[in-house]
Length: 203
Image 1 (cartoon, helix red, strand yellow):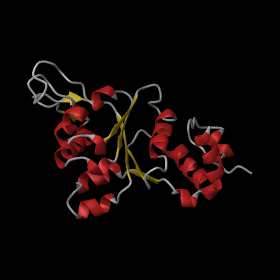
Image 2 (cartoon, rainbow, N blue to C red):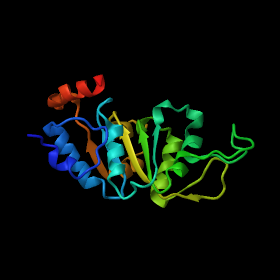
Image 3 (cartoon, rainbow, N blue to C red):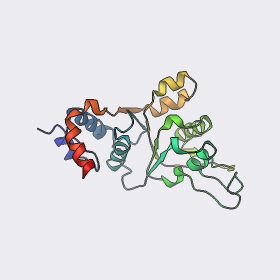
Image 4 (cartoon, one colour):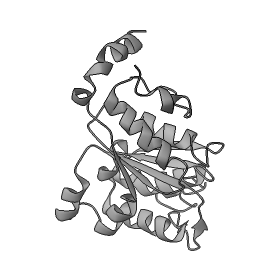
């Protein structure tokens, strides 16, 4: 028997491999969360497929026809985080003559997926909180707020609450992201999927 069969008949799940009970439970949660146009926080070990789950939430949600924009916060130089996220107007640091579109603008009417959100700088966290609260943000060197219509999905392989206690992550942002948390099971919890995953990656 395939515990994921019923969910696979109703969801678009491109790239998600496996039929274990642990995965079936997670996909059942995705089916409940995806139609709700609210922020989602995905937690779990590195390599467990959080980005595929974020894509599945987008593909099965009300913004499926809009863009899905992914940004890995861990790969960005600290000096470029805010301009990469929120854009920059001419005159902001390294953009003297041209406007830079940020990932928030690129995700308009769609989903912005922030992977490794625990690595986001504190100033960028403050701007992200403002975006979630007011649906507005300021690009670098901007004096007027811009409106944003996006769904935010975030992922982390760390304990964000421990980051809050260590003053590395804003508590108010944590609770804004924690609206609908989903924990992605580790491979140790999905041993039934190992053979199928191995065949998939070999292919």
